[in-house]
Length: 383
Figure (cartoon, rainbow, N blue to C red):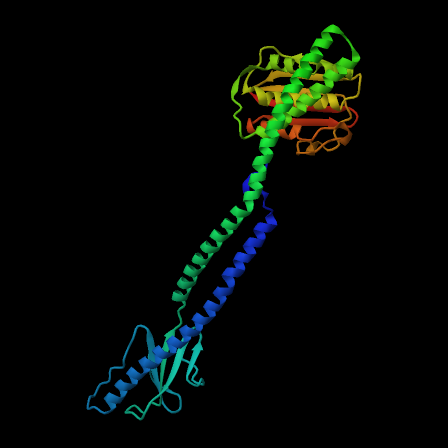
């Protein structure tokens, strides 16, 4: 069963992400453009104010009787004075600017201001003020805005997704309850039918019609148990216990006795005695029942199924081999809803359940198949 927002398709999530990008990118673009213009304007005014202070000191010195002029210095601004021919008279600039600009200009990562001077003692015609361009403040502001917008939009999207998913969640709960109730209602009549068929078998022994009915019912029971396991999986604990695997395998073979007899299939048992395993009884029955029922289903009449169970080193090997048609694509046999032949019925979930159980319990499974010769499923259980 699909839970919660898993109903929502990936395209919907992608659409929400694109909306998020647009919502964030558009205002950021206008903000950055506006902030860059404001930064340029503020820099120009700062340079003008500093240039006026430097020029004022030059004028004061020109009108004084002092012999030494201490050119103003700053950690933020660099300055220089030039004569009428554009030659530097004194410079604190880190790099020589190009003086062809009119008043204020950006040059190589610096803001440059060209300030005209009144007649002075140095015969300086132009004062140039320079300041490095720094966007650190803008970067911090953009980062903060980006985080705030992202959080707000993500909150909005999560809220939309939560509200959008609510109808699906309600439907999911309704569907789960319906399936549970339906399966509970199915279990009782199936048990009643099986008891009555057992009674009829005792009255009319070796009756072909009763035997076929019992085998068909047991096929239904296997499918029912697969569906029940599929619905309840990850919701119900399957406790492990110490099991006599040798005896357990014999019991599961006996369960399919009617089905085997109806198809005139014999089972050769090569079972080593007293092999114990720590495993869930329910999960182990799903592994053996699905493998056996598939072997019977895909085997022609009057053939043989070989069930082997033996210990090898630190593992217990369970092998179920049939003499059927073989599997066309053995690599897909554990995929959910995959069926070797549609005419054979089933939902294609049995072996996917088997693979899930094996992965959960670290059981290695090997499939060997040859066309028109048969298929072998080999399970490697840890002791």
